[in-house]
Image 1: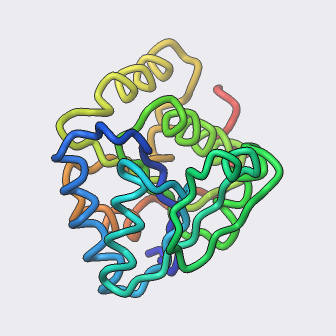
Image 2 (image 1 turned 180 degrees about the vertical axis):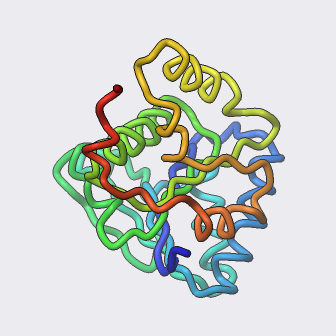
Length: 195
């Protein structure tokens, strides 16, 4: 079983985010704060990012944002975070997301969220990050991506065992339990090659 003290949450900044996803953040933050788990995220003030920050702070939780310098100029950062770190670029941001992070949580989002999630899965396959990755597939949001990953396995670009690199849940209340119970990913480089 994995110990979870800090999570990184990948999620959308769109101010037009549908209500069910905002509601899911409310549930997730209740669990995170109740268990005194620190959150690291992109630092934004709108969409799911803004809701995540607002709810964590409202409930007395700890939340740290990491944002590239160029976003400082357009003032996308949430103003009240526990911590806010500016870094040189998007690559450094994603690297810093994983420092001391015990699990990754992917909520619905756009191309940035998808890119972060797929990079994390790639890093896990290569043994660069071996902690739990939990995907919240609320309302079937991630169905097309999961189907594509299944096709990668079917077409022999990935091994069936690679499906164990992530865990899919459909309700936000299941996220932390899924993270704790996820498969321990060992001997990653040996598993990386399709045989």
